[in-house]
Image 1 (spheres, rainbow, N blue to C red):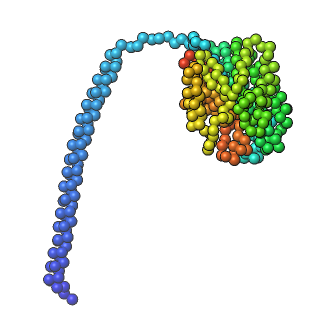
Image 2 (tube, one colour):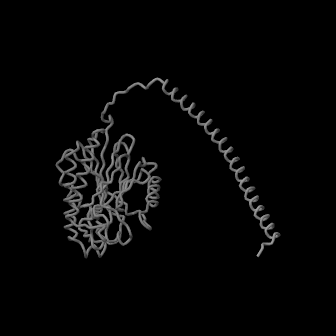
Length: 355
């Protein structure tokens, strides 16, 4: 069948139109890319000009620095601080007699009399090694030991009485023995030692309900201190200061420390940092006309911390208990130490043990 000439002509015209359309589109793209290339070329030229200026600027700075006169060489001299530094270590919350089961704390805490002795020896050895290191730069001849209570587990809770490793009198004797050994061990390494004892705590009290009157004397911490002090009674380098009330001020290297156990601080939902600050503020107002104080030293809360540079919180020897584990808390066993110089407290260190 012969094709219709009209149809062939129409198809040819359609193809020509499409070809022209494609050619026009390609021509437009080519013009766009040419314009884009010119734009990028101008931008690149501008960047090169800026880099050239920057390199000249850098070269000018290098030449100016090279032309400066060199700083005179100062010979390195290693020498100790001229002012005396006092070392401080805190002892509290031994809870001797308490038995903490690793099975009941999922392994986060365990404790008994044998572990207490091992931890105490590790901490005091670590402290003395630290002092040896610090003496390479500081003159440290004096040590202050702050004792802040709760050295026995006691029987203030029924579960403590039921699960204790020893009766309360035995707890007291063993706690005094351990504390006295620590006193004697530390005293060997210092020319002068001051022991500050605050006995108004909660675990050592002899009554179920907390008291304020005679809280320091009506407590087994008083007996713990008597036993411990007998270990160093004949040491002429040791002086002992004991609080008659719940709190006392003790001066260390010119700075006044307010020392207490810390159980009077109200708690809610964990470690009460805000309540600690509020109590410090109340004490500051109370004492503003009688010399005030620079630092507050407390125990009881088992979490070593230096809060805002002024509140020193001690750890515990027992570490995480079953009660702590029930509340989602974990604090490794620790006791803290620090130095006091002419500029105040520095080098705060929690000596933590994994034993």
